Image 1 (tube, one colour):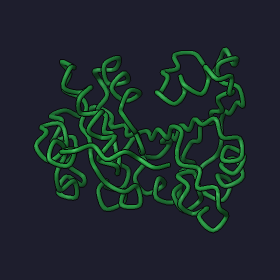
Image 2 (image 1 turned 30 degrees about the vertical axis):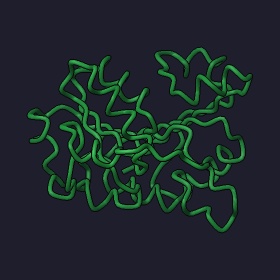
Image 3 (image 1 turned 180 degrees about the vertical axis):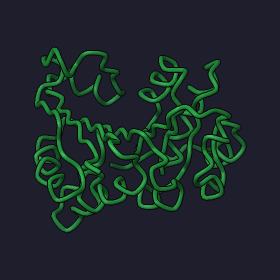
Length: 214
């Protein structure tokens, strides 16, 4: 997917009070940044930020960190954040491969993955955010019993994810190929921009929940 460059996006990100510069300096200390001991949840590849800003607004007793590597979309999330009167949401511009450099072992309670890049070529499988390699990173930063929630409309990627997770320290506890028609799993569902777009086109949304076993 080719992303349109947004003029001045890097400067906006650098100057925003809602982005964390040098996030490695906060490793193991994010609760000090938020000023409380509330759980920390992160979204990896948050895009324009609709999902995580809605989550943060609805759940003031949870701390959220949105992670995005593309400046051109992160700047849109900052624009949304500037309109909110909340204190439980920050952003980091970084590559997901560096999660272990930024978060301490067991520091994160939950990880959200929404409509991640499918990296369709087989040689790029390890780059998929639901590969066993990435679940190895999640295993490091999640607490015992920590959760990964993943949504996509890409059936091939979803099947790949279900096959990969058993090779990790996680187990799939729930999954569906048609989220919006699954009364149990759709309860309290918050839609992303892509979810709204694809579901309006008639594409069923797939979702799985994976729990860290130890």
